Image (cartoon, rainbow over all chains, first blue to last red; front, side, top):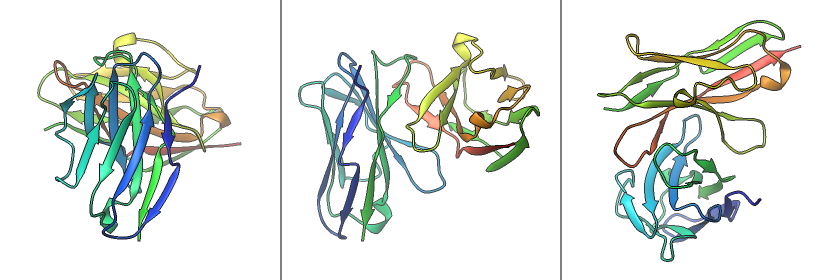
Length: 114
Length: 110
């Protein structure tokens, strides 16, 4: 079956612009996670959704970052007033119902802020 | 604080040699430990997790609570094992978010 998909695969934007990154989880997975991976680092947690609600957003770095999952499936990560330091690969993962169920990762979106 | 440390950024071995990728963690409580792998041009995927007690592709990992370690081992490395390996932990009763180490790039030479 289809795995987690993310669009776009690459996004280049200018400092100060607004961007949206999309994640399509595996069908039936209620848990969805966003991570950010900077060069030379492991993935860092941003936010976790259980269904439509953000159960844990403790990893969002500041209020320029926001994520939604209005129907409990597709999720969008939104970044306002982008800064050069936001450049990274943004990873999405989904799992059957959270807990210790395996998290399946998408291919990531590489964001470059010029 | 939750922290995962992988002290080796790069590890190079020859085919057939034993390999050990080190992982130490810091967590107040009993976390669940995982190893994730990313092969070249592929997405991050789960290799094994402590709770399953499985051996995947010949790899095993033993949780040592006294030393707070979860080292990944394989007795005979293969060229196809060359990849980026990430150790991760997840706390209990929370969001089960994963906290990752910085990763170790393993190269198995012919």
